[in-house]
Length: 396
Ligand code: ADP
Ligand code: MG
Image (cartoon, rainbow, N blue to C red):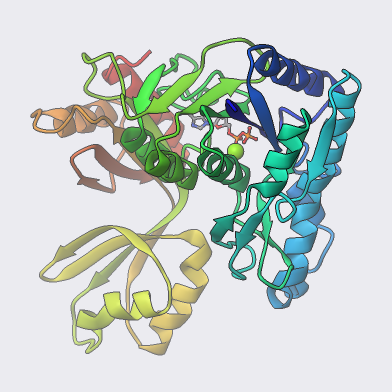
């Protein structure tokens, strides 16, 4: 059985028009002899009636904190509704489809509500539906725990649902349909000249996904890499070939930089060594309190790093408790300049810094690894900075 997992994101299922396009993608797959397994996200974005953020806005913040199990049930509703609406659209085209919650589709998770980890996938139900010539339409972003409670697997989790089903069903491909042509050299909403990356390796795209390009979830890349299932990102609105992510990677060898992505809501922290007795233990203390850091620069008399803004209140309270002073810069963005071919090539950092200085953008911090160079800038300048770097490396 040649199985194809086809996942459709929030914007792809948001209107009747777009759902017609989704149906045509499923029909095409069937006509080509594939057995499609459809995965859907909740319809639309915040403000739309059944979008996850809209549902979340119906309840109080303190209820959210104390009732994770109830929140997961609420958050799962958007995707569940979507499965039924999509089955309706398929039925209108004489395709028999069966809607399934994540749990019914056999996705078993731990009970870490809100961010559950998938422990196992039992494909029995999906396979029996496929064998009857029908199409399973699975709610993304959710599973169930050992006590049958509905869990959710983290924002953007429908990509993960698709990837894990692709792996468990040994699919020919996991296709992620969205509102852009594929993975581009930068977010096309920020850089109008961004171009499509046609082929790319799991490793490089993982870096993109992990560093903020929300077009694909990093876990979906990891899972597909582990089971060697090609992951293809496509546009629901057209017939473009999209981006193929596989072990083969890219064919175009001339560009040292593959693309640029960024992450907002970073806070830069500086802690100077003085009489504070806890200075040497600060990293342990932050780790024990589950505050994750990056861009860590350690100097003899100073430690500099960034944290996510959502952890800043916790951080402030903690440092007050241990009586440690620090300075900070809020509203920072971390830009990642990614390219597997930059390794060993001199002058890349120099070009980055020159391009940003030309635009009078101050670089607050940098770091590098074999595949990525990071620059911290104030969020106010991030779009200008990404455009300048995109031009510098001629990615357009
Ligand atoms: P979906 O609802 O289909 O899952 P997402 O909003 O999660 O869609 O992801 C698609 C969005 O990702 C695009 O609209 C685009 O703005 C954004 N994006 C960020 N970086 C990139 C990139 N490098 N290439 C393509 N899209 C990107
Ligand atoms: Mg998404």
